[in-house]
Length: 307
Image (cartoon, rainbow, N blue to C red; front, side, top):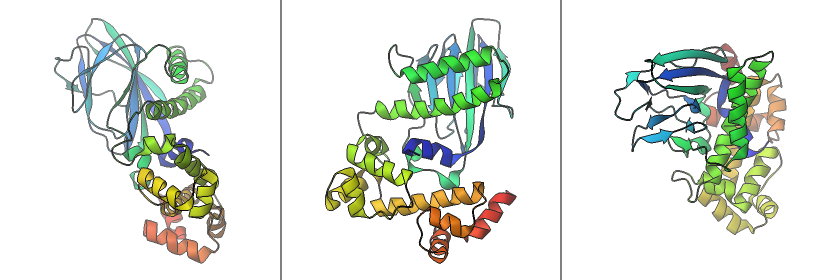
């Protein structure tokens, strides 16, 4: 798997949920902070204002998308001066549901989608993102993202047999398209860890891709540098500067995160998991895993199954 696909599959718990809300003026809602979750709002009809926790109000129109990777508090309203009421439109337990809010004026329809994240295995790529990402529906930009929004709106407006599966797949696609669009539009590295620059960098990007596609391979700094087309010392400096940790430290961390996922989601034995992520012995794997997670692999599996 490539880096972004791995990151999303790695962090998310369960399937996405959503609620389609019809807001009629006058209206203003405050969405409380929700640590351990990520989500996005898509304007399907009408217009409104985004009221971020910091900064000026942002006008939103049809096709605009707001991604909130950290579950920060924010508001939406038909008028930026409108008083905000606490929202009762949180995503439901089913894949998608409908709700209404406000008075009898002009209608704005918003699709609100949410994901649960495991904060114990947050990838640094998520930490590098700002609290609010606004992707306006600019003509000609990010056509895949716009197409996914249009398909999602069509399915929500006209549910048919198979809509549950289609909506779930489109929500997964939408989140990946959002991240791709965000990183592609960054002119400067992310202020936290430089992941925007790391993914765009031809050398570091190739090395990250290689690690994620084949974490079990006996990579060395030199072999990763050769794969990426750079000398050992220069590659190590470049990787560390953008990713925030040396190549082999990131490789080890990703192997252990991948192992944790296999322990939770597969029936492979501990020895098989160790081999799949690149450890020569179950003993070495067990020691490394316990240093990272505080428990042995077998106990980690039992705790995950009981959760």
